[in-house]
Amino acid sequence: MTLPTVAIVGRPNVGKSTIFNKIVGERIAIEEDVPGVTRDRIYGKAEWLNHTFNIIDTGGIVIDDEPFLEQIRVQAEIAIDEADCIVMVTSGRDGLTTLDEEVAKILYRSKKPVVLAVNKIDNPDMRQQIYDFYALGFGDPIPVSGTHSLGLGDLLDEVVKRFPNKNDEDQEEDTIKFSFVGRPNVGKSSLVNALLGEDRVIVSDIAGTTRDAIDTPYTYDGEKYIIIDTAGIRKKGKVYESIEKYSVLRALRAIERSDVVLVVINAEEGIIEQDKRIAGYAHEAGRGIIIVVNKWDAIEKDEKTMNEFEKMIRNEFLFLDYAPIVFVSAKTKKRVQTLLPTIKLVNENHALRVQTNVLNDVIMDAVAMNPTPTDHGTRLKIFYATQVSVKPPTFVIFVNDPELMHFSYERFLENRIRDAFGFVGTPIKLIARTRK
Image (cartoon, rainbow, N blue to C red):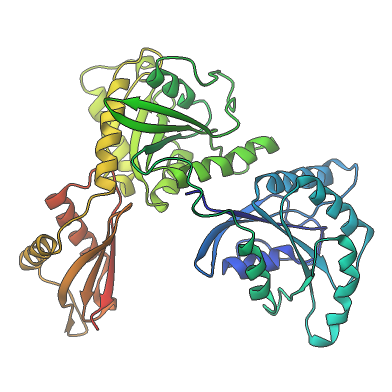
C-alpha cells in the first residue's frame, strides 16, 4: 500500500519548515527567518495515530515573474499535485494577506483536501487573530505555533481524517509486485519491454523519458505479477528539471508499493555513488532486492569479467550482501528470462516464516559456537527468539539487557539465521528486547 502524502504549502516566511521539522521529529529542513530559504521540496516520513505518511516541505508560493521565484512556485505546485492532503500555512502575526489569497486560488484548482493552519499563534491571547482566515474558504482555521509545538496534534488529527481509505487495494494479495529502479538511462524501460516481449513502455536514449510509474499486469508460468516501471532517480543537485524531481518521489513511492525491487546498474558506466544511494532507498524500505546489471552485451569481456564485476558489486554494496546479482542485456534479451524465477524466489523469502522451535535451535547453536559478549563484567544472556512479522522477516530476541547486544554479535546471529534458512534477496531485522 502506498503511503499517503501530505504537502505543506504557503507563501514565504510563514513557518512551513519549522512545522515540517516538528512533525517529522528532526531538523531536516533549514529554518531561517528569510523568505525563500527552502528552495526545493524536502521529503520526510512521519507518524500520527497509527498512520504513517510521507510529508513534503515546499518553497513558499509567490506570484512573481522573477525566474528564481517562479521555480519555487513550480516546485510547490508539483508537490500539491502529488499530495493526498495539503496543509496551507499562514501567519497569524501578519494577518491575512493578498498573497495568502493567491495561494488559496492555486489550492482551489488542485481539488485536493486542504487543512488551514494559522501559525505563530504563540499564546492564547493571539487566538482572535485566526478569524480573518475564514475568508479563505477552507473551513475552521487551526491555530498552531511551530516554534512552541502548540496545536500540531489538532492539525494532524484533521490531516489524517482526509487520507484515502486504507482498504482500497489495487491488486490481489497473491500478486507479486516488483519495480525497476535506477538512474536515468540504465535501461529500465527496455527491461520491461524485454520481459513483456512487446513495446509496452516508451524506450528512448534520452535520459528521463519515463516520467511516471507505470503498472503492467503480467502472468508467467501461472504466477501473477505487477511490473512497476519507474522514472530514473537522479542525484540531488543535478536534477534541474522540475518534472524530473516529481518523478523521484514517484519512484520512491513505487519502492514502497513493491514486494521486490530490481536495482538496475549500467554495465558500461560501472557503479557510481548514486547507484548505492538508490539501493539504499530499497534496503531501508525493507523490500526484497535483486541487483540487475544491464547492457552486459555492450562491454568487452572474457571468462573472468563476470566474477570481477560481481566482486566489485559486493565491495561497493556491502549492505546488500544478501541480494542476488543477475547479468542481462535488454537489447539482446540474454538472460532476461532468469529474472522472473529470481523475483519469485526473493518474494518467497521475503514472506518466509520460521517455526519458533527451529529458530531457537539455530540461535542456541550459534551461542554455543560463539558465546555472547560481556560488557563491564555483565554477559549478554539470550533467553529465546521468535519471528514477529514478514516482508521483511523480523525477529525479536529476548535478552537480559538489549544494550549488551553489540552490533557485531547481532550481525553474527543474522548470518547464522541466513545460513540456516536462506533468506536470499531479503533484508532481515533483529530486535533485542528485555524479557518481561
